Length: 111
Image (cartoon, rainbow, N blue to C red; front, side, top):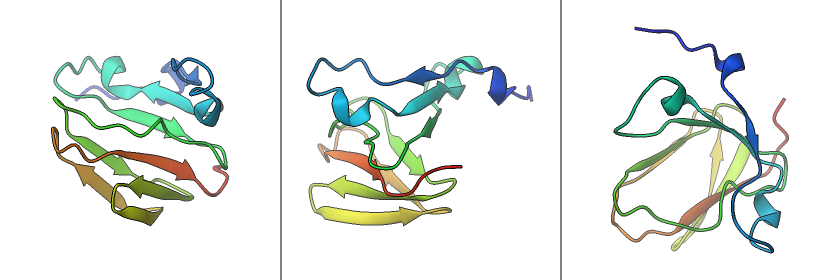
């Protein structure tokens, strides 16, 4: 199994949303680990969210499942049904095509 050099995976700061939708996500940093490993059937992203930043605008996927796993810090997962606090070691899963809108809001600073 090829080991990825995570430090060598390009980091992308911000998002591709047009203003003003880009502002809440402007400081997030994402590394596309799946792309770096040559994965084509699903994506794996390592995301750093400074305090107060969003992971994305609220969204859902029609063709991909989504899994959020918190490595460190604390965030609020915002869904149709309310808000859930996720801490290091917690995860949440979203099956594709459910129409469940979500995004994550960072509450603590990553170190």
